[in-house]
Length: 92
View 1: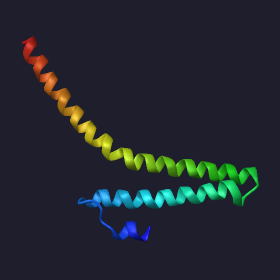
View 2 (view 1 turned 45 degrees about the horizontal axis):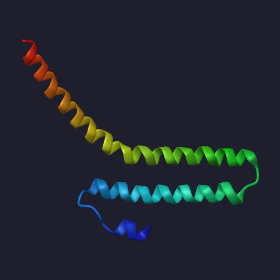
View 3 (view 1 turned 180 degrees about the vertical axis):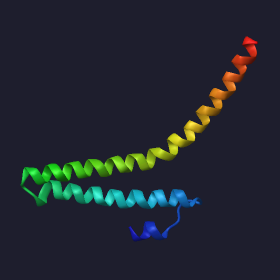
View 4 (view 1 turned 90 degrees about the horizontal axis):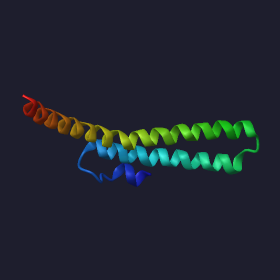
């Protein structure tokens, strides 16, 4: 974890931040797995740990898919505008 925070693998600061947050969230999820498997026998606590783990996995997915969806959304918008203009010219 210390190496990942000190090493700058990417040129953009955003990508380095996402990489650091990925490592941090993966560490938290690993701790959840230990808590879920070994450290508690009560079903109520396991349910809470499971929901917490699902929440952190959701945050991890949103963090990683967010930039991809934003970039593809801009590309899709440009493609739709291009074809809308072509269809508009053909109809006139």
